[in-house]
Image (tube, rainbow, N blue to C red; front, side):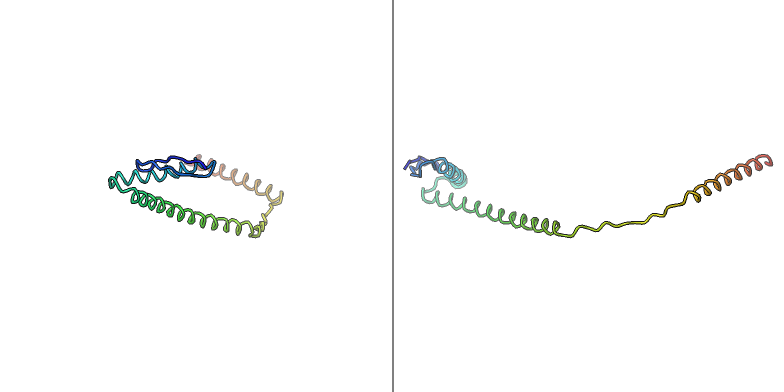
Length: 133
């Protein structure tokens, strides 16, 4: 069983671990060391047991906060997935048909003819007004 020297709060500890787990142990020690250094900056030198206890509690507090955030996010994801499933299970909307009136060609031609006559009458009236005035 390999033994790893870890450094926490300026102190060195020899810790045994399973073969191949050395890098996990070192990562965990680095986290604990970061909290210990933060404590030492705030409070100063502490007895070893107190420093380790406080650093462990600070990490546990951060972990609990992360767990709470993760649970909140998992709840939101579950809610979103439920909404997606509800939307996917809704029946497809029925296409609406709208009827549009179709004007017969004869009516269109007659209206165009009437419009042309009205324009001609309007032009004749304007010419009479210019001549009279």
